[in-house]
Length: 108
Image (tube, rainbow, N blue to C red; front, side, top):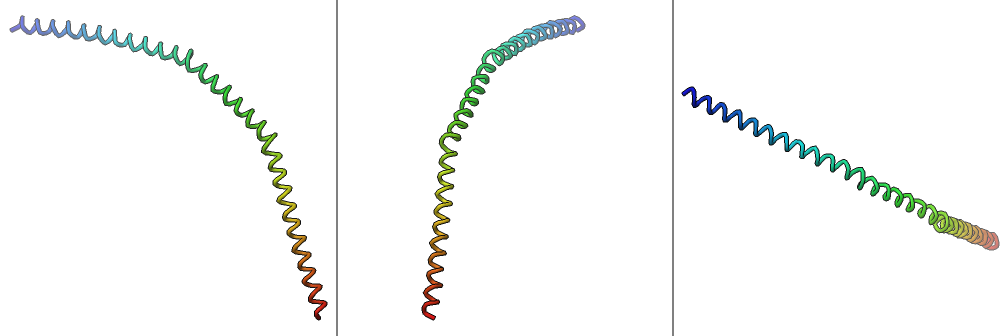
């Protein structure tokens, strides 16, 4: 009985040693993969982000140019025409009101 127990113990020790070796190898593989991921992030993703930043800056500059050369003049023209129409409407209303007052005075 003692020899069987010793044999089981020895087999368990060998299996635990093999398991530790397998876990160590797997940890090394995980570390290698993490290193590859870090390299990928540094060498591939960073340039993509730089390019994206440049594109956003270019779009921002284009938007500024379009705003200054197209939108602002259109807003000024629209504001002027709206103000002119409102002023003409008021002048016409005042003219009609004055005309109405004059004809009331003539009829009296």
